[in-house]
Length: 632
Image (tube, rainbow, N blue to C red):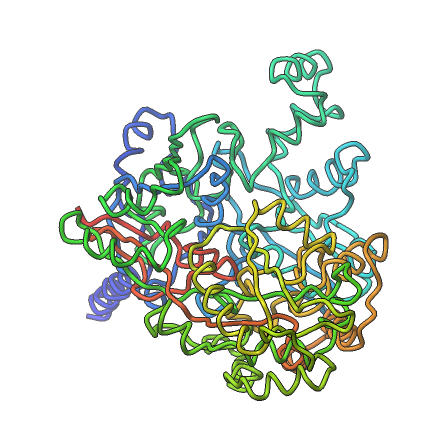
């Protein structure tokens, strides 16, 4: 009797374990023939011992089916790099709540903000089946970064703290660590970024291009055959992971490019060793191939509207929505409107480093920048350009950010012509010529050329309205459009007075994310390019800051870099946000505007409402396209 009962309960326990333990499904159909022929291991053998199980419940996803080709449209061959942004496999990556979690790494431990230990997944392999180990990280650090010929650019900036590099140590085949003398809060966000800090390379593949490992005669042949300048140029070309132009380069992404450039059609095939699984233990991705077609960016909206893309947002603008909606029923897709995760859809950047001495003095006076902001009728811009769907706001974080405060979005943004005029009068610009245009201290008319990269019809429409607004406060506006590289060079050189571009790249930030956009840290910042260059190059180029309020922002940023706990980071972030909008270092118009996203009607697991942004969502990346599937 006792034996029978024990046997009965054993059966129950085994059955319960079968229910709660994910089991690997049947083989992926497209790989089945290779597995049966012995050319590829079975699914269970291809996966790491502890694969990453995607939490479908948290992300509101459903179990999918294998198969299908996902079609995407791109406007230039360089957009090949967007695929690695979209597919978003990272050593560590952002989860849907914007916390950083292990991804390629099985685990990581941070000690005192300066000691970072990573453990890889046992059995994880590159797309060619070779094991991923600590050697791949050692190779990057010792044979690339520290090699005098390959590492001419030096240690990546995200791996420097006060100009000092970390020590790197391998603990075992799957474990390694980086240690700095001081905290490095930028390190993990850099690893999780849309264009990440890749601190690894497939060493087994790359050594054939490295002079320290390759046979001299074979390496010389490869250099000649690939028409490279020397072995270093060849190595650089063959190792690019951000823009996967080399089909032979093993990858850890869900799909691998199989098409060498030049081409107008790039085919990405599934990585049979990808490390993620669904809750049933079935290996991801569900979709077999990504097909990226390169066409003129001017026709992408037209092609998307005729059903030539299964998933499309790049090169689509809000003004395309009426056309896209008309084609939905006939061409079997839906136009979804995601929130754009920028601090401002269109922002003005007064150049605090302008070469014109008179204008520089005017622009550095905070009363002038506040007057410019108060002189904009954001409600009109929202109604006329964005059909009332956006939010009038300063260039700051959006309500979806844990750092959001209503005061930040509203500071100096109320349309108030009287107050704007009073501020301009107060600072000595009260004299006007007969047509009402104000006169500068040197007697010139206050005529401002706003410069743009000319890539957006929205910018043109918004600037047309702003020009009307500014006429009422005595400022005459002209718009100059040029190619992006020329536009940026003029700003960097101080030849522009005001530039127009989109606002903060990351408007859904958390306190653990780098607040570098709020301080002079980089030449690319259009409001203070020379100060940013000075800080970004460790005083080697650019100009020292000569404005106290901008210096305060940089001091706060440096404090954040040394902060040892989240409480201090939160406090510093709020101080920086408050200072940034109060000093009006850039002028926002509206945010939370809408990005049209074309989704085929039979494509599943794409969020109904997402945030479309470079950082931190990597456009589609944070929503895990490896879990998307076709219900066909």
